[in-house]
Image (cartoon, rainbow, N blue to C red; front, top):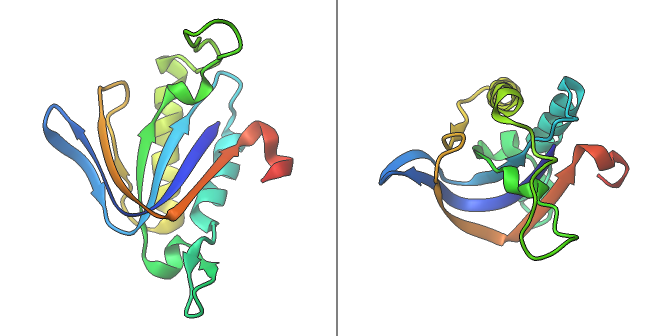
Length: 152
């Protein structure tokens, strides 16, 4: 799994001119799922997202996690995070999980994050043409990959 976390002051997802999810302060999380992903990957990544300390404390240091600031998550499924760009100029997506695997894992990530934070997770619609709006705060953008845990 790959995740791009963006610390935001606001973010929303719109599909067919209807807002499907919106948050104020928190994380916009773009989530890519690949065939090799396991429940262990999902749990590791969910814990990392929920506990990532990148929100300012009283001294202005990045020392607080989502729970400390009552922050929220907007979770967006994004298979393009697994784009292969080595050959040519048209990306390939063979590493991205097919919907029969990706949808249940995406839904499980929603449930897991919701349980960890004890709140509802705002979402996009899997496979839809989504329009994402955000105000990146900082900017703070963090990329995580469960196949490269040593660097995270």
